[in-house]
Image 1 (cartoon, rainbow, N blue to C red):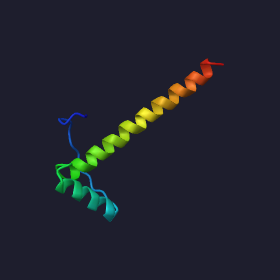
Image 2: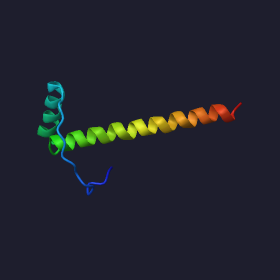
Image 3: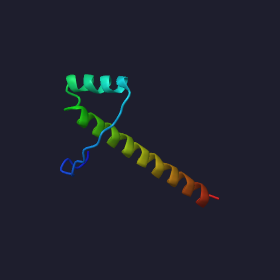
Length: 68
């Protein structure tokens, strides 16, 4: 999925209490190892989905240009 050996940087974030509660439930059911793991995986998923959508939009725009 992503390079687990990459250097980690400590940050501080403020989150809605319901999001923290959801992450904690996922830690309790072993979906995530801990809160940091949950946040990292969620951000990674958002990043890859956003990048894939951007590529798709770029390819779609190029197809429209070249299909004229």
